[in-house]
Length: 149
Image (cartoon, rainbow, N blue to C red; front, side, top):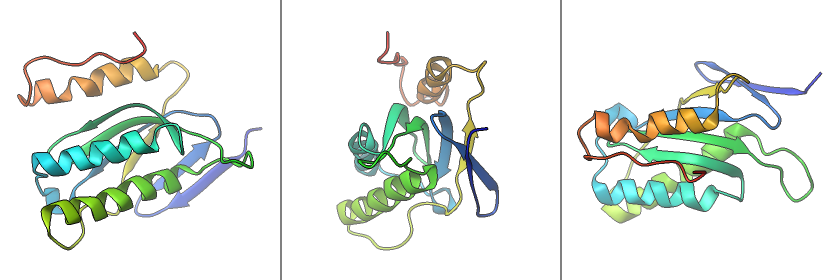
């Protein structure tokens, strides 16, 4: 049986090694991130890719972020926990957002939503769905396609 890592904030979170996750986290009080701040957050997601997690896709909306990611292992072969990946993305991006906007205070809600993709769910189809989120919200006219195509 695969080892399972569990932690709890307000909601329980489970992690199985090698699994892919759909993650959403929101700004504190649903604060709208200015475009410059959204770029900072996306840059942090790019920086995380290949280091702590394989980021299948990332979409930074005005008040929330969607990720499809697979946590990696560290240099010693130990699994990197999903909570650690998210803490790094949220923590560093919050510091950089505040620096960019010359402000102080929390950027993100403490809690996040994560869903382990089942074997019948593909990372590509979930990615396509979240990449169309800006189109559905009227932020852009056309969607994006996943890099795997």
